[in-house]
Image (cartoon, rainbow, N blue to C red; front, side, top):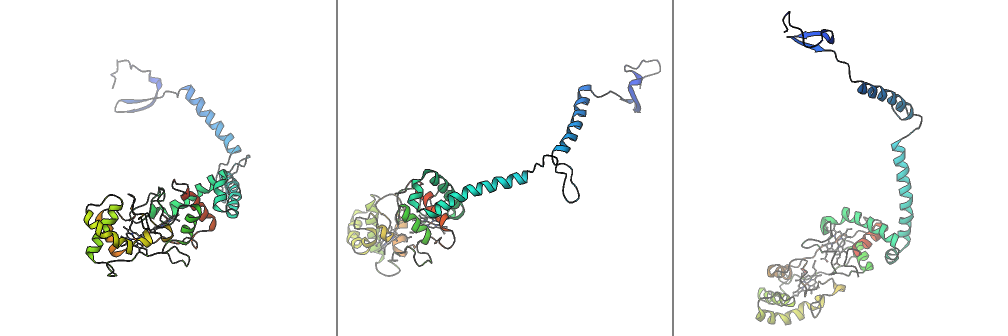
Length: 289
Ligand code: HEC
Ligand code: HEC
């Protein structure tokens, strides 16, 4: 608190006259530039109310003289896109898969659609990049159980594998131990033979004993040379690609109890256009034949 004789360092008339515990409130005007900008925004907002949608009313709102509406714009954009899409979809419906692939523009559209349908319906089993999991085949490599042409893939997707559809691809590997076709020792031997086919065996003696067992029990589905038979869905056993694992324990388990993986049929769940798009997409992943 300034004493009586002390001159206040600040001009007395420059306060609002409010004072608390010796602290006075100054009355400084706002900077001029700030004020002008402030007035300008008020003027601007009035213009804005007139031109653009602004005040809410009870049932609707003031639309503004331009009648601008993001919602209407969106609806038009969607309608336009739908119309463009419709042209493509109709073309896909009328073409077979090989014609779709031959038409670059249509192919781009179809494989994009296929990719999104794959994410929705297939990735839970085959993985989002289609690389598969144990028991669920990789669809991006060139190893095919049932065939990798466009038509093969389309057929597999449409009717499934061991599915409940009448047209399903189906062939069940016997469970050699459960069925008592082979005993444990024989299974060990034939497993060694299978491993030797891909040079991953460890017991040449057993593999030798397994060879005739293979010819008798396995060649009808996996081929005389173990290279697989697609019309049987019998996987190639000579490479390093395994659906159920290529270690001895997994191979013994497959032979003993069989596996019988199920791929659902999609004919009743997806429309033909989506199935074609999926076939085109899967075929384009790298292993298409
Ligand atoms: C419920 C799990 C599951 C779903 C969902 C699924 N699949 Fe499969 N799919 C499998 C299994 C299991 C196999 C292997 C069957 C076998 O052992 O022969 C398979 C095999 C395939 C094959 C054959 C591969 C080959 O090597 O011949 C194709 C192609 C395929 N699936 C595509 C698809 C597409 C496209 C979708 C989505 C529409 C899909 N799958 C959804 C489980 C599934
Ligand atoms: C009637 C046909 C059939 C016969 C016979 C058969 N298999 Fe198979 N095998 C299959 C099919 C189909 C599969 C695919 C897996 C499935 O069931 O999902 C398979 C899978 C396998 C696998 C797993 C391959 C992998 O990639 O993981 C092995 C190993 C195998 N068979 C070995 C044999 C051996 C050894 C014999 C003879 C003792 C045999 N199979 C007899 C049809 C057959």
